[in-house]
Image (tube, rainbow, N blue to C red):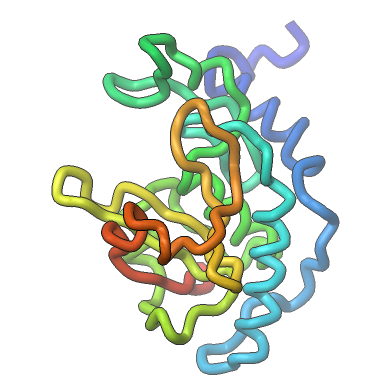
Length: 198
């Protein structure tokens, strides 16, 4: 075996991420992307890059646990997630889950200056609050319900839309009028803007 250290699910995940990550997003500039706090012009430029990376992922499959700094990757199944109609799709799907998509888009667009955890709750706490009236492209939209606090994250693109990876069996998609859709408007828990990694 040519790569003995890359065995099992995580080894395959890493190899597929390396192979596919670069091809799933446009070649965007990675210059000084992270703005200083309060630099609205810099925030807007970075946010547009984040939204462009997200748009390039539209059509990529959802994979529970999929996605990292390199791009789409093999997902997995746990006790509750990664299944469709009782079949584990996570272990055979290269794609993103919601937090994997947001971490990849922010990492890629910022040239590595913003590195989010692969966990929705951690992304919420590692980002600065943003009022809905002040949303910029690239901001993260978080969703919650009583049985699943902070269960989902999507990327605001402007014009009332978000790009997200919703659940097993779907593709990364752009959702128009997110705040006009009863489910998403009811579950909206707040918007955040990621901060540069320390």
